[in-house]
Image (cartoon, rainbow over all chains, first blue to last red; front, side, top):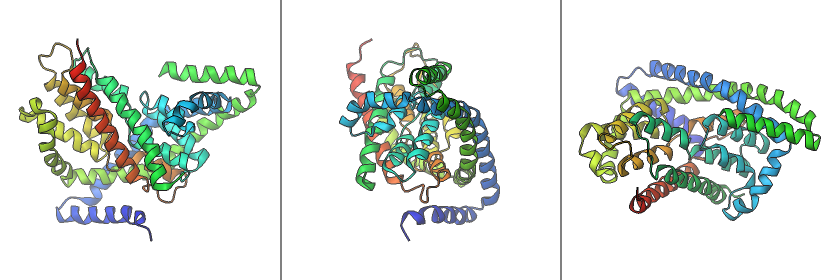
Length: 173
Length: 190
């Protein structure tokens, strides 16, 4: 039995007991949240269909290989596997686009492969930067974002490099 | 998005013509669309379960407990905004919801905080508002549930085994983001 196989069951059981102790309606909260989750799936499905179609076409045409090869020298210097190049380009712009690219990579290389893991960690440790900036500054009536975008992109790039590094250190290549 | 999609498809057709891979491109278009639905269905169960767990955490008041934990940190990160009690509580609610992976619950208090911080600044983002947005674009999440559901849908036995890697990467990325913001804040002239 590995430690990671304990996380999910213990988290669920611990949370349920804690909630019972606090007199929270455990089952009601779970199902209400699950309904929200289903809403989320329905909301991203149309975008996922459009984007996974485009990404599949892009890969089948051979354009993905050309892109990957073109960026490979730079990415290898940063320690990033070149196959993840499309994530770097799409992630700051579109969350469902990145999800499409990541799922394409994971199903192609396997979820427990080096590339599959790096792709997952990249997705989990970064955000849709431009969308977030637009939402917050749009709502607050900010017209000049000053240095926010460069700083946020520096954070994204760090996340990508760190994803490759941590996966290499923790799981090997 | 319209541009990204059209350019992707346009380039694919161009490459298909030039390299004679049109048959593959045509097949990929159909299988990609079908794959998206399979993927969404495969992810739906895990995603619902984790949304349920997140909602349970929220109803237990774990987000409020986390928010209280953040306050001292936020007072140092956003000293001016923290003098306003309502802004401080909005920012900490925003952060704790992000941390628990409650994306929908994170945005409203985040926007409330941003609005309060943007008052009287004449449309230019102040240093602290820049920091708040960088904090939000860096995504620090305790349980990256979407990507774990995706891995589970692809047949992964331990979809959460990437947790330590995600945490370390997120921490490094948010640190560099805030560090860059601080540095640029000193250098920026406008």
